Length: 241
Image 1 (cartoon, rainbow, N blue to C red):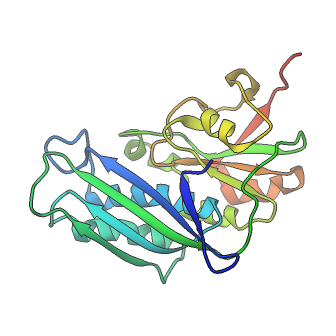
Image 2 (image 1 turned 45 degrees about the horizontal axis):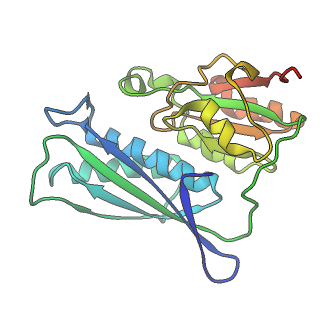
């Protein structure tokens, strides 16, 4: 299951609501990871917006919950705007609120992306042997996200691949690639020994620094061209009976 809520309304239309939280990441003295607030908001936004798009949603609005103080607000908004620019989204409204009465010792941000899905789309995926799997980007977490930024898949690539026909995308979160693979299909369960790839399938992907793509063999060349060096093939080894 995706980390989203789908709310049907007006016939076949639905609202898609996705969210992300960030704690102890920012510019306060007791934060565990010290990065500018623009970076905090950008990565929190990318998690929620990737979930929204993967569920078939077209983003409409972003809601920021800011517990970092009044001063970082403009930086947080710039981080969201950076992500919107990468996705070429021009009409998304940003709103939110700041906790200004009581200062916190550590930074905290909550972010909600609200999108609209205007058609009925199957939510259940069934695994078939002819399907192919790849990971686009690398699983990174904490300071790795900053230190190894060149391995974080850009939102623009995620968006381009999401528009493909007969392609399924799935952002990878803190529980890792193997966990996400086992959420995707209703008829297939994967063990670590079955998944052959050059990336760590058990490692946290933090703020969705990579995603899984499911496709068919005739689409591979096109996907590899889109993803470039971010493309990592996954081979599924059949379990012995």
